[in-house]
Every structure is written in C-alpha cells, then in structure tokens.
Amino acid sequence: MLTVIAFVVALGLLIAVHEYGHYRVAVACGVKVLRFSVGFGKTLYRWQPRRQHPGQETEFVIGAFPFGGYVKMLDEREGPVAPEERHRAFNTQPLRSRAAIVAAGPIANLLLAVVLYTAVNWIGVEEPVAKLARPVAASLAEAAGLRGGEHITRAGFEGELEPVQSFEDLRWRMTRGALDGRDLTLEVAGEGGRPGRQVVLPLGLMEAKDADPQMFRKIGVLAPLTRPEIGQVMAGSAAERAGLRSGDVVRSVGNVPIVDGQQLREAIRTSIDGDQPRTQTWQVQRGSQSIELEVRPELREEGAAKVGRIGAYVGAPPEMVTVRQGPIDGVWRGIVRTWEVSALTVRMMGKMVIGEASLKNLSGPLTIADYAGKSASLGLTQYLVFLALISVSLGVLNLMPLPVLDGGHLMYYLWEGLTGKSVSDAWMERLQRGGVALLLVMMSVALFNDVTRLFG
Image (cartoon, rainbow, N blue to C red; front, side, top):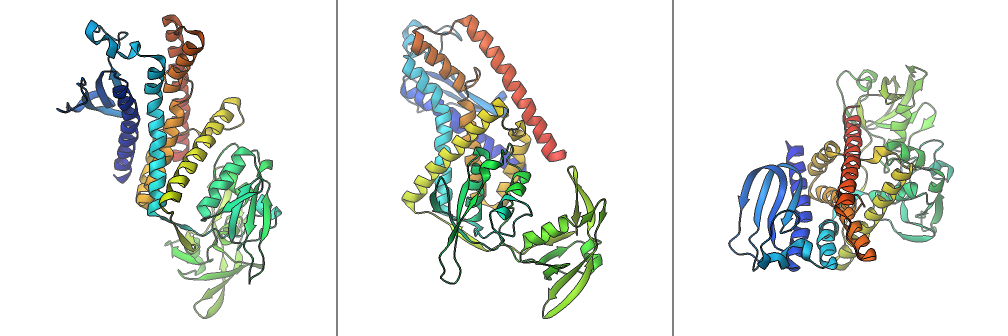
C-alpha cells in the first residue's frame, strides 16, 4: 500500500509542477488557458476558481489515468477563435513567447529538483561514514592499493579534490567517474597524526555501460566498513545448522583474517567449488569465548553465477554521520547536484543512442513505483531525494528533441527562428508520427527492463 501511495504522490506532484510551469508562463504571456489537467481520461474531479488572473477562465481537472497531464490553451489550430480573442491564442504569440511557454514545463521540473535537494541539505540525512570495506579481490580498488578500513576525506577528478561527506557521496562520484570514463583521485586520512595519502582509481579503464551492482564489483567498493558480526539467523538455514548465533563476531574464515562485514559476505559468496559449497572453519568471538565452527553455505543462483549463502544477516550497521548544510551552502549544493544529475542523464542518453551504454539503463513505471515505495519506507529525506532524481529525469527527458515532447517543439521553433518559416503541416504530421513510434519503442524497452529487474 505504501508503494502505491508513494508512487501516486510522486506522479501527481511531478506532473502538476511540470504543467504548472507551462500554465504560469502562458498566463504571464497573455495566452488564455482553457484547461489545466493532471492525468488523462475520465474526469475524477474538476473545479474553476472564482478568482483568477484577469481574462482567465481556466478549468482545473484531475483525470483517472495518472501517467501525464496537459495544459490546453486557446489555439486557432484546435478550434475556432473569436476575432476579439485572437490576440490571446497561443499560435498568434511571438516566437520567444511560444518557446518560453514550451520550455517552462521542463524548467519547472529542474527547479523543483533544486528545491528538493536544498530541502534535503537543510534537513540533513543520516548516511554511512566514507570508510571502505575490504575491496573485492582483483578489483580496481585492490589494484590501486586499498585494503579496507581507509577513511576517504576528499575525492575528485583531474586533481580537483573536494571534501567527501559520506559513503553515498563517494559512491555517487564513483558512478560519475565509471560512466564518464574518468579516473577518480581519493585522499585517504592518515592514522596517528600521520599525513594522508592519495590513491587513484583508474575508472577510465572500465568502459562501464550499466550503473548496476556488477559495475561496483569491478570497482571493488561495494559497501562501507562494518563489523563482521552475525545478525538475525533464519530458522533451518546453513547458519543455524553450523551453530552460528546473532551477535557472533567472525575473526577468520579458514586461514584468512576477517576485518569487516563486506569481506565476510564476499568470503561466503565465493565458498563454492564448482557446483558444490565448500565447508570452512570459522573462528568466532562469542562474548568472551573464542570458538571454532564448521560452516557449509547453501548454493544459490544469482543470475548466471552460483554463489554461497548462509541464511543470516551479515555485518553490523556501519558508522553513521549526519550530512547537513547551511542556508547558502544548501542551496548551492542543491543547484550543483541538479546540474550533475542532469549532465549525467544527458550523457547516458547520448551513449545509449550511439551504443556505448546499455538500454538496460532505461526504467519505466514499475521500477519507479518500486523505488518510490522503498525510498518512502526509509524516511522523508530519502523520499525527497527520490523525487528530486525523478524530477530531473522528467525535465531532461522532455527536453529531448523528439517531436511529441517539449524538446521537439523547441526544435520546430529553432527552425522557425533560423528560416523565418514555420514547419509545414505535412512535415509536422510525419515528425509527430515518427516521434510517437520512437517514444513507444522507448516505453516498451523500459517496461521490459522493469519486468526483468523485478521478476527476472
């Protein structure tokens, strides 16, 4: 139920803000707006405010089908217009006014993202400290000299290092570097008053196409540092059969010392010999006692790979820090994050067009609904971050030069500005059909990806 409510609220807010951008600029330009609708299809609710901008008689509507909305303006191309109101029709406006009205929707979504990111910066959010777990074997992080336990204080590209506020901040920078093909420089805090050192993650070597767990496995940084403690043990699991209990701290697996939860999880995953799990001797600290247990994980399939599982929560919660910004810094960081997400989205779309990035990065309504519910269950700030991310995506998507989107109409106006002639009706019809076909293909791919992620 939470997923449905969070999804509907997200859609309603993002669509309403987008359409309000069109509506507000249209009114400011003197265009008569006939209807403001959030949703399509059968009308669930309608109202007409008594007090509106002079000359406006806009009807506000909520439709039954929530995937979209529209602002209907007075326009000679859509119906007869009285001579005395012709100056208020959309099609009779100057080119700059029409372009401003069309661009206002996506811009409103980007401004909403700035507001949401700013709110998160002001409220503050609890995130793991940027201390690294032991890196995955044969990964970029291990090759760069990271061994686990390092506290990353600064990071950046091309030598421009900036403070790292949390593990999620570091993870975002690694994502950008891997997808953009840029090396990331990390500054590791020194111990006992000793000076720190710099480590370069050669992310430019990855040629990453998907922002998925496999990408982070190649980087080698999967999770923040956690204590290798056993949490809840499932009844009838391999952990219970081995005698493991909640609160046990694992000191070694076989002859390998264990220093963090991620290293322990990796040891469990890889405890496979061919198609059979491998029994290992675990050294466990239970209170003041040190005991040895023989643990034989269960075999599980994870995609095409076979991995070990013990049926218990592995790793204590990481050390947390409250990330909060002041009034001015909060706004600035909100603007910067919106720009960074927008730029990364544009680059990923461009890479998908030329085949350098996988179409698996496209997500549809099922994935959005799933993440809406998950983020809402984690608290207000996580839900606001989710809304900001989707708002950026909606703004950038609508600026794409597809005829059925706002960006397509802006391309028409660019042509009109360069040539002095509007696009002919015949060409307009052809382009609209092509745009609809391409949009349907994109939606189909996104829906297929949704089904694969959730049920595959």
